[in-house]
Length: 421
Image (cartoon, rainbow, N blue to C red; front, side):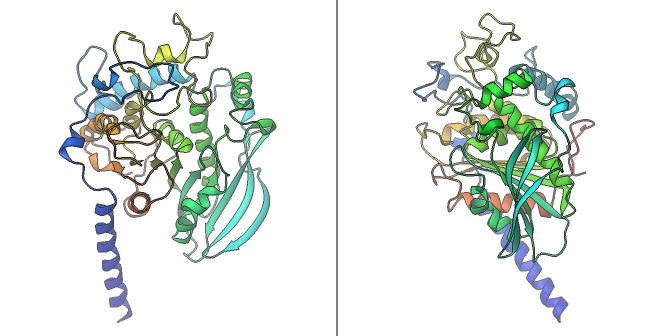
């Protein structure tokens, strides 16, 4: 009888989850799916107003330099994705340490535990992790206590540009850790770096002084990789099921982690404002630093902007974040937007963000995995949580880290329709 009851309960739970998943990310309307153009450049501080870009169609990530489109999964993985990787590496300077840099990245397990506390359903460990040999970053490690012994899936959760590295525990960690996920909560090096610097007190310059041109947003993605490496050393963690979630500042980092961090199996980006030249501040020194001159950029101006926007006669940047969303494939990626206006969402992803999503979706559709790229468009505002935001990330992680995880090990040998490994 107990077995029967357990089976019934499991069936009810599965049905409930299926319904919740459908509600969490409702299907896009025909109007949303028809969007194909850039977002209006409505940030008053943008160094590139680009009049008319909102009327210019975004370039498909499937479009090859000769003007033809990629027509097979094999061609995407073997040719087109490597082309985009080369272009974006040129933009970012580097996406991982070179040989000379590696001396600064030592044993990730040499942590310092500051405190351990028991919370309802999980254990909280406050610890510092050596992201560089001489730089300890603050973290919380949340380990499920009443869910068996594991190994569990894990989620790396980052704070926004204000607040504290412990904020993600309140936003997402309490729920996740109480429901069978290990959680590693932290923030970016632009919130806390060597010598206690931040984005506004010298962190970008310290980064360049040590590593040369490694744009902060790309270094953030590498720090996520370091954190994943740490989690893989923990006996409680299933290292093949590690996700990432970020809001606002860290949602931007999530986009780059999707493209450049193969250790991450599923990504949630809560309101990053996906357009590079839209209503937010990717041009600032702590992201892409558009207008800083670099000696190794061989263009007339020597700026990152000249690499993002090589055709100055065409409104709208040629390099944009739909390419990074596409490069995340074959892994699941959830974009959550907080505004449903027609382009005045400020820092939120509004209805114009569908243009970037729809172009990235072309790649997922080509690979036969369209369901793995989702856009939860909400009116919850620029927030980490909300009545529509929360069901989206909860059901996303439940599906892609617990029920049907994508066992991704890297982009090599990804030929034919992408599949679970």
